[in-house]
Structure formats: structure tokens, C-alpha cells
Length: 155
Length: 141
Image 1 (cartoon, rainbow over the protein chains, first blue to last red):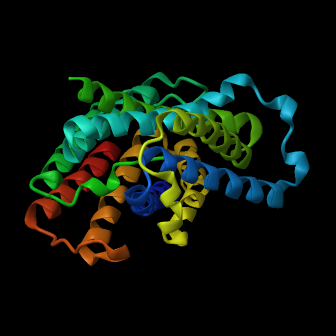
Image 2: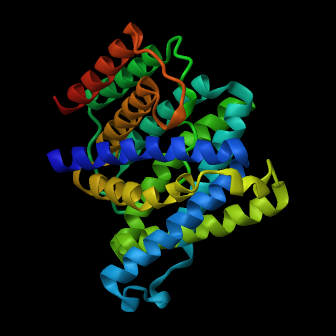
């Protein structure tokens, strides 16, 4: 439990770091150039680590099913949607909606236990917690001009 | 309205991506999953870049090189996210991840790291962070 929370927290912190770095690339180039570089770098780096850990035999190409492609496609969909939304709504409003949708989907998924995940039954506490977190995000974003930094999530 | 639909879809996709990665890693292992999804994303994004050609990709040379390696964080992020989902579930993982993300972004702003303009921490931010953490605690009651 504590381990899971630490892992999730460090992933969140790393996303912010990555976002700041990606924004630096974005300032000079553009959204799609940035996304291509980030995913290309991510691919090269994870391929190297996979080979170091498991060797060539860690990739059994015949085990790869076609639907695995969706993992990467969804990631690109995230970038596309966020770019389009920010263009129309600005970063603060966009982020508030994105976070709400993100948490609601997570809550829904846990309750359904789809795709082989352990089903975690619906509870009032979970729902109340999500509403408080979303409220906290809204208060946090209140007149906070420096909020455009956690917008592009491209992994 | 179109903007709101994009924002909602974006949020759904962030969670969906984490869940799908978690599912694929049950089949082929987590490191392999990350490699495969980063690769397919890279190919698709490259195609989009060919057609969209937004901004100016020739300006890459003007970017300080460490920033170009940000993608390497992807491994760490997805590894931790998937491992967390398998131990504490999607809702708690996403909640903690979001809070850490917001707090970290704010610390970077407050300290003015990476050449960003310094921003002051004000009362609403403290209250907001307090509420977000309270929300996670309520979930666990």
C-alpha cells in the first residue's frame, strides 16, 4: 500500500519534470515535433533497458497481439486532445476538466474491473474523496497564472 | 463545446492508457510493454508530424540537449504507474499521481527552476493542496 502510493507519487513528480522539459522543446519547435522526440526517446531508452535486463529473448514477437498497438495510439490521442482543448479553452480550464475526466474514468474502471484488473467495489468514500480532490484542484487553480506547466502529457 | 469534448476525451485517454499498459504487461512483461507502446506511439506521431508540420522542427538544434532526453522519463513514469495500479488500484494511483504532479509543478514554479519565472505560493494553493490530500485520506476511510 505505502509502496504503491510512493510509486504513484514519484510517477506524478516525474510527469511534471518531463512536462517542463517538453515545454522547452515545444517553445522552439512545435507540439508534434515534441511528441515525436519524447516518444522516440522513450522507445530507445526502454528498448535498451529491456535488452539489458532480459536480453534478446525478452522480445517474443509472435506473442505480440495486434491490439497492443492501441497502447501507443491512446498516448498520441492524449496529446492531440490536450492540444486541441488548450487551444480552445486555455490551460487552466482544460486541466480542471481533464483531471475530472481522468479521476472519474479511474473510479469507473475500478468499479467495473474491466481488462483483467481486480474489481474494487464502488464506495461512497471513494466518490467523496474524488469530489474533494477535484474541489482542491479548482481552489488551487484559482487565480494561479502559472498553471500551464502540467498540460502536455506525452508518454 | 468542442474544447470541452476534447478535454474530457483527453482525460479519459490518460486513464485508459494506464489501464491498457497494465493489462498488456500481464501478457508480455512491463519493460516490453513500455517499449512496444512507446514505439507504436512514436510511429503514429511521426506520421501526424508529416501531415501537420506544426511549428518548425528544424529548430531542434536550438533546444538545449538535456531537454531532448525528457522522453527517457517515460520508462520510469509508466513502470511506476503500472506497478502502483496493480497494488493499489486505478483510482488511488491516479489520485496520488495527480497530486504529486500538481505539487511538483508548483515547486518548480515557486523555485523558478529550469529558467522558469518564479511564482509565489499563495493561500489558495495551500488550501487546494490540503483539500487534495484530504480527498485521498477520505478515500481510504
